[in-house]
Length: 530
Image (cartoon, rainbow, N blue to C red):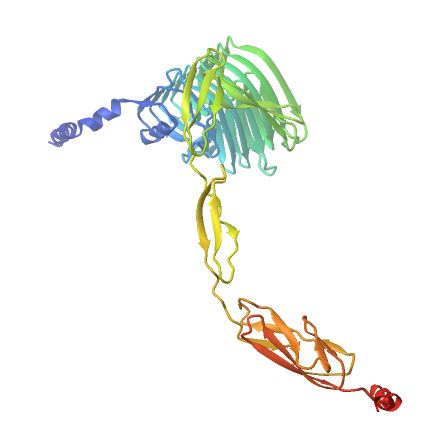
C-alpha cells in the first residue's frame, strides 16, 4: 500500500511540475559574467559556455559544483579570487591526520562533476588566511570528478598561518579524480607566516595533494614556497597519498613537465621533498609512466629568505600594453623596475586593433569617432552626442550698492557662453543703534594725546564707519582716527558719530596745566600776556 501511494505521488508531481523536471535536464548557456551566477543557483546543472567571458572587475566567490560544465573551447579570463568559498571539506596530510579545510578557485568544491574543454586565462588567486586552505585554478577541492581537455594560465599566492595547505595548477586537494589532456602554465607562491606551527605545505602543477589519474598533461610551473614545516613540492604533484582502505594505485602518465622550484624548509627534522614530477609518492601510491621532464631547476635555502617571483621588497612596476590582433590575445606586461620580474595581466581576447579618428562634439553640435582596424582596414563610426552646456558657479559681475542692485551670472565652463543672469538685491540697510567709546571722559595736559576707539552696534550695521569732531579744537583737537590731542586748558567735547548719522557718543576732555607748565605759563612768561 505504501509503495502504491509513493508511485501515485511521483506521478502527480510529474503531472503538476513537468517544467521543473525538464529544467533539471536542460543545458544552461553561459555567455557573460552575469551568467556565472547560474553555477551557484544550479549546482547540479548542466552548462555550456557560448562565448569567452571577461571576469575583470568581479571579485569571484568560489562556489561548489556537482554538475557538468562544457567550456566548448571558450575561455574565462581575468578571473580574480581574493577569499575562499564558504564550503568546508576534510583534507589529510601524509599521516592521514584530518583537517577541516576551506578552498579557493573557480570552484571551491567539485564533487561528482565534469569539467570539459574549458580554458582559463589570467586566473589569479591571492588568499591570506589563518585556516587550512587549498587553492586550485579550477577547484580548491575535487572528488570523484572528471577534468578533460582544459587549460589554465594562472598566478596564485597563498599566505597562511595554519598547518595543512597548498596550491595546485588545476586542483588543490584531489580525491580520486580523472584528469586528462590538460595544460597548465602557472606561477604558485606559498608563504607560511607562522614559525610556531609545523606547516604541511603542498605545491603541484596539476594538483597539490591527494590522488588522481593524470594523463597526457602539459605542465609549465614556477613554484615558490617558504615553510616553517614540511615542504612537498612537485612539478606535477606535491604529494600523493591514497585515502584509507583504498587499494587501487593511481597513475601519472605521458605528461611533460617544465618546472622551476624555489623553497626553504625550516623544521627540527628536514625532509624537503622536491621533484620534477612528484614531490612525495607515499608508499608508491602512484605509478609514473612515460613522463617527460622538459626542464627542471630548483633553489633551496637553509635560511628564511624572501621567496617571491619579484625579488624587491616594494616592487615598482612599469606597464606596457600589448594590443590584441585578429588572432592573438592582448594584455599588459607589468615589469618591476628593480629586479626585472614581469607578468601579464588584463587580458583582452583576439580582436580587431582599431585606430580612432575623432571629431570632438561641442556643447551644441554632435561629433563622431571613426574606428579603423590597423590590420585589415575594417571601419565603422559612432556618433558623439553634443555634450550640452556645463553650468559653472554663479559669479558676481557687479556688486550691489546701497541704492542699486548688483548682477551675477553663470557661464558654461566648456565654451564660456553666458547661460543665466540674475540681479543681486540691494542689501537691507541696518542702521547703527549705538556707539561705545573706549572712554567717556579724558583728563589731559597740553601736548598730551590719547586715542579713542569706537565700537558700532549692531556689528552688522550697513555703514560701520565713524567720524570724530571736537566742539573746541583750541582746547582739544581730534583726528579722523580718534587721536585726541590736548591744546590748552579748558573743556572740550569730542563727538563720535556713525557714518549713517544714526548714532553718536561723546567724550568730555578736560585739559589742565601741569605744575611746571603753570609756572612756565603764568610766572615766567605771564607778563607777556598782560
